[in-house]
Image (cartoon, rainbow, N blue to C red; front, side, top):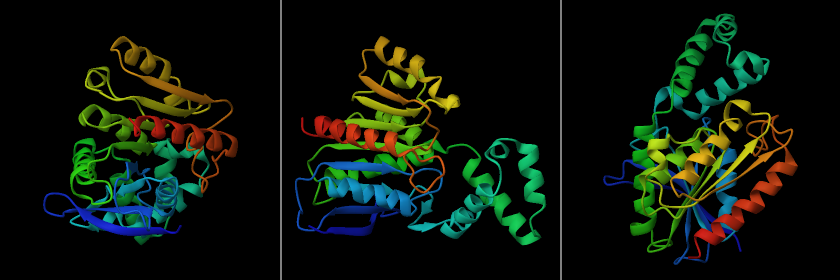
Length: 272
């Protein structure tokens, strides 16, 4: 069976847009999975992941968090994001989080590119605009549960990667009807937000991604103390973004295991 894929407008005034994938001959009663982007946007990799969950039998939907009124804003257009990603990939990874070295590398670019990279970098890495993004994700949940013909009346779960992993956890805090949330190497919600979670969470982390993975046991304790369900894996000798097969950090053994486990998780929470 082949897939049907579309860019779909949604929201109260059709102001948002997302990438949808489903089996082409299945038009109803499909549980839905919201796929939440990395910082690179709904790129080819995120579209590929969306299609994988569609092939697994779900209505999969990736909201474009960088779009306004159905279009990317200038500084976050696809070609601009790719330009920043290629620039960062040209640098040693230690420079990414070293502002002085990174700014020096930017100053060495030709003037036009320097201006573009600076503006787009600031938009992308200036902090997660969680309040804006969560509104788009909540609207996606409502659309999938109430309006989309193929998934109407069915359960909705979420999965996110890096920035999207953090947002997947936040969505669980804000959407009382969410059936489950998978977090791939994303920051955990605050303990205050944890109190509002009504669904199981499953986390996937790399041992060498210390900035995030070192905080997971504390998050697990908070979840347990508030009576919330949370399982997680920390993969040995594995870096951040291990699931992204377009990045140098990709690790096939961890990605394979995580994919199998997240499918089991979705089967469990979306079959109830």
